[in-house]
Image 1 (tube, rainbow, N blue to C red):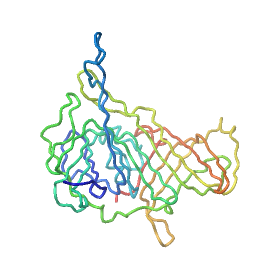
Image 2 (image 1 turned 90 degrees about the horizontal axis):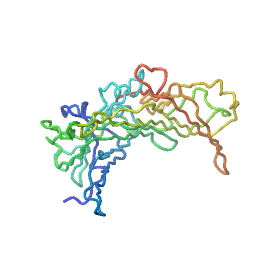
Image 3 (image 1 turned 45 degrees about the vertical axis):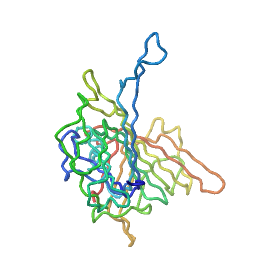
Image 4 (image 1 turned 90 degrees about the vertical axis):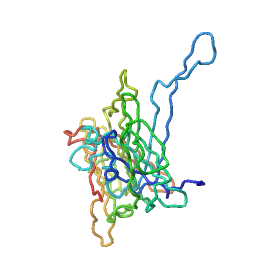
Amino acid sequence: MDNRILYAAEALFVGPSPATGSQPSGSILQLHRVQSCGYDFNRQLEDVREFGTYAPIDRVELQLPQITLNASYLATNVRNESGIGLYVGGDLSVLTNILNKTQNEKNYYIRVVPDGNSAAGYGGTDGGVVAFGNGTVASYQAQGQVGSFPTAQFTVQALDSLWTNTSSNFDTPAINPVNGLPITGVAVTLPPVTTGLASQISALQPGDITVDLAGAGLGINNLFIQSYNVQFDLNLEALIGLGYKFPAAREPNFPIDCKLSVEANMRDMGTGRLSNIRCNDTKYDITVTLRTPTCDGTQGNVKAKYTLKGAILEGQSFNSTIGPSKSVTLNFSAPIGGPQDTGVGLFVSGALV
């Protein structure tokens, strides 16, 4: 009997689409550089009452259980983003694969090996797996700041979850949304856990991150940028009808705005007038670029790039106190559209290794 489960004994995987289809081991992708992983479920029970008794005669589950998986990882490339279904070609919206239904629903797996072992390199199939069926990305966030490695995180909403004590030949966690029954005849075997591809760097560094504000901002000039935060929430809508035990689909609920926040220390005062932007509200293409660290003074290869096109400056917040430098926070937003909307929204690109 194990006494505990430590992070070194766990690894996170994502399967191919569709979630209800076959899950060959060679198509199951390990998400690397994972820093945290959490999951929960909450049932929503309705009381059945009647005249003549104080206590409910029953509690019935009319609504679906809420199953959520959250994970964060070091941003070293865009392989993880591609794995969870985001489009990383850079020329189309980040939601392209979700909207065209090619990568919108996947199964997720947490591999757990026995206590005292590292998941990477462990050859046994014992321990166990926590699996999540019919998972859809609900939100995504990428951030970086001075003094820390850049990271990203995502949230998945699933229809079912299962626990098994083997990582080989176990049942798929996917279910049939019409009748709510598990998919039968599909076995899953997870691939061995590794520490990443041989060419994958360990971590990116703040000194190799640049943020191009494209001249946005009022009253600012020559900033020392301290942090960035890019995020969007799909506000998933469950499409369910009579005769369906679970949603036939969970679709993004438009409009969807991508938010970008940039915090910086001010060096010089700039110019501008707030009232002037009422009739001349400029839209900006803001870019955050993460590169391979170098030691020769040159710029390294681009590993991840986030471009918010058609961004509007929603607000600025200035702060000055005794001690630290005067700072400013700039908040931008842009609507995320479909694959044909190439001039507005969030566009992600970079390396897969």
